[in-house]
Length: 271
Image: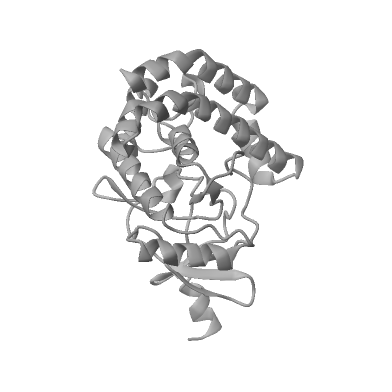
């Protein structure tokens, strides 16, 4: 194939902010920037499959120019503003079930402590298993309205399963005040009801249900700090997103709303 033909075969894949404009499909493969811990991450993804979790890309190769090739998973991925089909109760429940499957397999995979895992969205308390940490709609593949695969494990790091669920809840409930949620989510989503659906589909224990609202608040603080670092570094995508979505006042509003809704969420989870 000529260089022109090779370039023409590269189909840009949209979504996400960290690797925006740098991810391409090449037939049955996806070519993307390799994370610094690619060798350990690839070993982890292979181990997941050995333990029965086949709902993630399979690493194929690392290139000499710092990129990776992984298998392409066909299906639908929702991008903001999110369409109604990705926020149905059925879709939400399937995300909870898929995350539980990931955690059951991940718990059987030893954490490679010789490498540095990304700390961007990692559980500050650490943990004995690798969590995805970024299960947002952009990173979940759907077919026929059901979540069938997780992609983009770049921010995966050791943590608590409940931390990963809290991070997931932030995106899928969403755990946002109504004004913030209206920017990219369809109207009419009742956070307390959706949080219960996610907890039920994941299979949370009563003790975990009592802990979840507080961990969501903790996860929101970590996400805010992540954005602050990106903005301080001058990342144009994060600077623009912060400006367009209401600045730091939006983050203040979200955190105030979460604190005010804490007891409501706890009651919904434990009722």
